Amino acid sequence: MIREILAPFERVTYIREDGNQAVYKVFRPTKHLFINKKHDNGRVVGFRAWKMPDTGSDERMGWRSFRFDRIASRKLTFV
Image 1: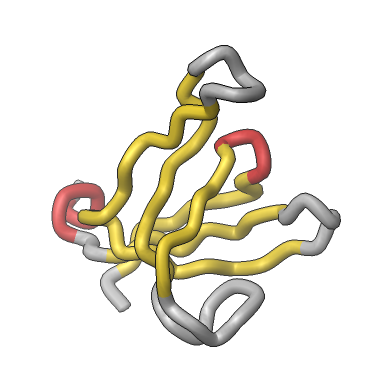
Image 2 (image 1 turned 90 degrees about the vertical axis):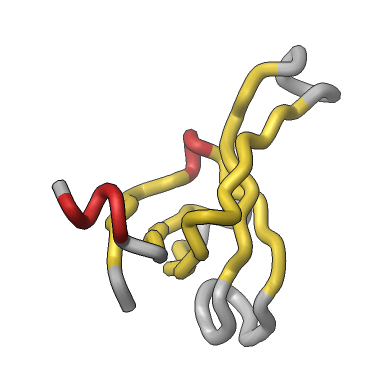
């Protein structure tokens, strides 16, 4: 319960478009819903969040979008 409220990060195992999996650590307070106006008739299809460095497919930090249908697992974490 406390983890759901206070954990600043979320570890997301994501299946990329090419079929490979990557593990990303995102900063939870930056999460915003992602709406795809072009292909999904304006439905909410995922979220956008600030990705921490040295996670995912590259070493850089920055904004990254995640589609709900490609997320294999999510876990809240403090580190």
